[in-house]
Amino acid sequence: MKVNMDKLKELDGHWNDVMELAVRYGFITQAYGGTATLATHKNQLEAYRAENYIKRQREMHRIDMEEAQE
Image 1 (cartoon, one colour):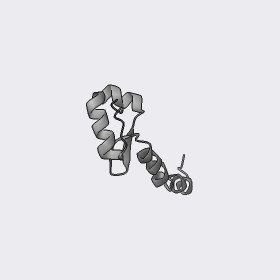
Image 2 (cartoon, helix red, strand yellow; image 1 turned 90 degrees about the vertical axis):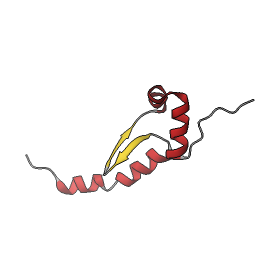
Image 3 (cartoon, one colour; image 1 turned 120 degrees about the horizontal axis):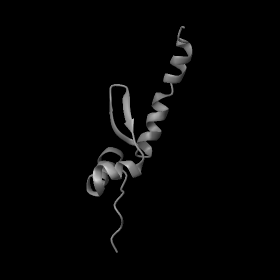
């Protein structure tokens, strides 16, 4: 078997599109050198607990996930 390199390049050409969406919606938990780990917000909250989850979303994605105080 041989890999269709033209198709591979075409698909990889969408990497930045995918990453922009992942950043915009806060799904990236880590990224380095052409790889990224994505997780749902529910799973991030379970893994990092509330304080760290809120902090990571602010720092990495500029998304404020802290509930408004009444």
